[in-house]
Length: 71
Ligand code: SF4
Ligand code: SF4
Image 1 (cartoon, rainbow, N blue to C red):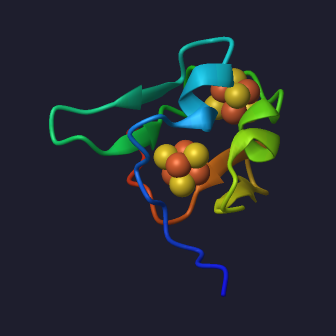
Image 2: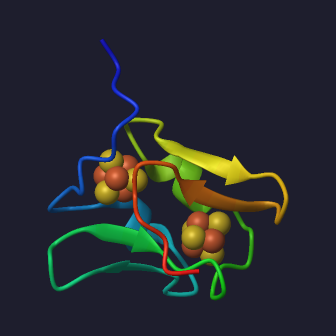
Image 3: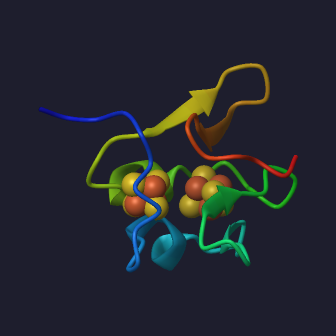
């Protein structure tokens, strides 16, 4: 069964492909998207094997629903 909860992967595909550095690992080992640094390329959506990143429709930027965002 697929889960819609972010796993905060040790090797996070989303973080590795992000061209702007918008996805970071925090001091608490959680992976978060900084929406103010995101350019909307959506590469992270394809890179997440669990399909947990969704689009914030109001801003047309990806966001990972289970991840805390700093924006
Ligand atoms: S968004 Fe996906 S790839 Fe990124 S840390 Fe969460 S589960 Fe892993
Ligand atoms: S959509 Fe934003 S957070 Fe996702 S890979 Fe592109 S710049 Fe990074």
